[in-house]
Image (cartoon, rainbow, N blue to C red; front, side):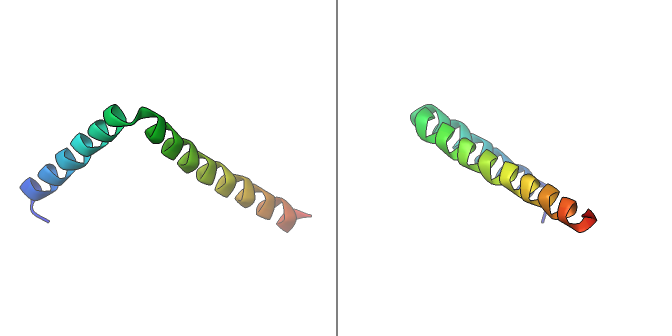
Length: 55
């Protein structure tokens, strides 16, 4: 991907994220919380998997 296209795409994503947060902060917070829950559950499951391997 050309450097200018990549830079433009990054700026568009950033501008969209700012717009989404400003227009609907509650919805944005819900999305971030859901993403965090998925990440936390993934690490928890991975830790449980490793614990079961060692026992």
